[in-house]
Amino acid sequence: MKNIAMRGYFCNPNASKNETHHHLLRRRQNLPIVSEKPFSFSSYLILNNNEKKKKSPPLRIRAAAAEEGSSTTNVTRTSDVKGSGTTARGRRLLKIREEKRRRELDRLHNYPAWAKVLENACKDDEELRAVLGDSIGDPELMRKRVGERVRKKGRDFHKQKTGSVLSFKVGFRDFNPLDSYIWFELYGSPSDREVNLIGGVIQSWYVMGRLGAFNSSNMQLASSSMEYDPLYDADKGFKVMPSSFHDMSNVEFQDNWGRVWVDLGTSDFFSIDVLLNCMTVLSADYLGIQQIVFGGRCMGDWEEDMTNPDYGYKYFKI
Image (tube, rainbow, N blue to C red):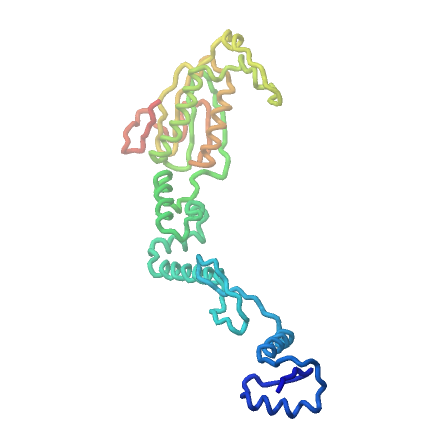
């Protein structure tokens, strides 16, 4: 007997041969014949698979999460993928956060006590905060910054500004540029450091005057404009009459008074302006000066023959 293929025919591929034969006999009388071809289960499977392909939803392509360094991906159905639910980037970020948390815990448990004290002090001390800068949190770098600060400016972090917010007074008492004293009244007895500061300024002033720095006869650039390259006549400067200091004594101190004897020689008077400019900054930033007096033989409680350090006498050698 010949098998026939029928439109709309449905057959169970798992049925036995006898079941299929009887089923065909029952259906032959009622269904129209399409063609007389041998029936095969392979043809049915192909047709049935095509129908399933039309009805099945489209495949979703998903890259399976792989280990770092792997370049392969798996194309599977979404329902077949069984992963951790995270990407490689997410795992890296999680690892970084865990390492940061671990470092923070180590820092809290192993952080030196002196570093914590410095961090707390920075809240109220602008100078200390400027010294530490971005080293807060790194004890070794903090130690290095503090060491540099100590070597440069000393160990007293909380020392207030030593200068004066008030300007000093300037007076003249029969001042003779060739034979006169210049007096300095301070707010208190000067320390060795302050004696060296004042003495160093006056010594520098004397060296410049001795070398002819204060000569108004040769001031070619004082009124020149710097918008264009100025011209300097070296021959004219060489031929100018020299002007220099002649002599100067050591700088002496008794209690809060200091003095220096000067002979300004042929130097011009604007050398006094230069000295006062230097003293203004020195008084404001380093040590307070109440007044400066040019001329006079005795100021305050000065004793001419008192040179004993036990009674407050100090000096700076020029």
